[in-house]
Image (cartoon, rainbow, N blue to C red; front, side, top):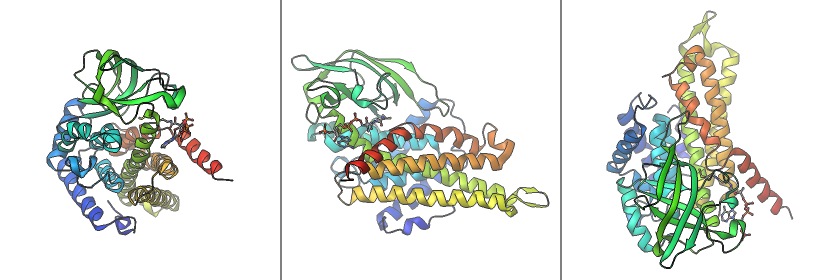
Length: 390
Ligand code: COS
C-alpha cells in the first residue's frame, strides 16, 4: 500500500498497527499478485482460505476472547483493518473473513454462554463456516416485511419460508436466521435463531451466480425444527439484533471498499507513471493528476469516516448507527468512483478479463448494495439528523 500514514492516526493503537502489518504480510505471502485471478471453484477456495485464515490465527478477530478470540469483545477497528488489507490483495479472502464475522456476529453480541461456546470457537479456528440469513425475496431493504415464520411447536419452533442472496448459502455449517414470531406486527414481531445446516427441511433451492462470484444461495425452510436453545436474545427482539449487528459490520464494508480503492490508486499510479503518450507519461498530464488527487482525497476521507465509526464503537458508544451508515455510504461510493478512474487510466487493459482494475470493478459493485444499500444509509442518516433537530 502506497500510503500507510493513516495507521498513525489517534483512532488506532499499537495493537492495531501490529495487526495491520501482520495481515498485510500474510496476505502478500499468501496471494502475491494473483489474489484477483478468477476462481474455478469458489466453494473449495473459500473453504481453503477459511482454514488458512484460521491457521494464521486471523479468524480469531471475529469472536470474543472467551471463545478463542483476541479482544474481550468484538473490536471494530481490528475487523476493519483485517478487511481493508485482505481486500487490497484478494476479494474472496475479504469475503470469507467478513462472513465469519457477520455470520456469527449476532451470537457474539447477543447469544448466551451455551450458544457462544457451541459455535464461536469453531468460527475462531476457521473450522466452522457461518452465515447471516436476513434477506427475503420480498424483504430486502425493508427488513420489517420479513415473512419467514417460526411457530412454537412444544419444545422449540418450526421454521418455514425462504431467504435469498445468502452469502455462504450452501457451504455454511450454521445460519443465523431472522423469522417472524408474531409478538407484534412489523419490526417488533421478529426473532433471531441459530439454524444448524444439518437440520432436515433446509433446502438450498438455488445457487446465485454474480459478477464477482462468491458462494450465494436462495434457501427454503420446510418445517425445520429449531430447538428451544436456538433463540438468540429475547423473542420479538430480532429486528434490533439484526440492526445492531449491521451497525458493527457496516463500518467493515466501508473498510473493504477502502482496501479496493487503495489498490485501485496504487494500480493507477503505477500505470500513470509508466505509460507514455504525447511525449510524456500519463502522470505528467494535469488532467490525470487531478484524477489521482481525487482518488487520494476520497481514500483519506473514507478512512477518516471508517476509523471514526470503529473507534466510537470500540471506546464505548452504545450505538453507532449514524457513523456506520456514513462510513459505509461514503467509502463504497468513493471506491466505485476510484476504481472506475483506474479502469479509465488503464484504457483497453482496464476492461480486459484478468486485469486487476477489471476484477476490482466487478468486486466493488455489490458493496453498495449488501448490508444496506446506499439509499438506505441515506435514510438512516437523515432520520437521525431529523430526530435530533429539536
Ligand atoms: N440498533 C438498535 N435498534 C434499532 C436500530 C439499530 N441500529 N435501528 C432501528 N432500531 C429500532 C428502532 O429504535 C425501533 O425501535 P422501537 O420499535 O422500540 O421504537 C425499531 O428498531 C424499528 O426501527 P425503524 O422504525 O427505524 O424500522 P424501519 O422498518 O423503518 O427500518 C431501515 C429501518 C430501513 C433502516 C432498516 O430496515 C434497514 O436497515 N434496512 C436495510 C437492511 C439491510 O441492511 N439489509 C441487508 C441484509 S444483510 S446483506
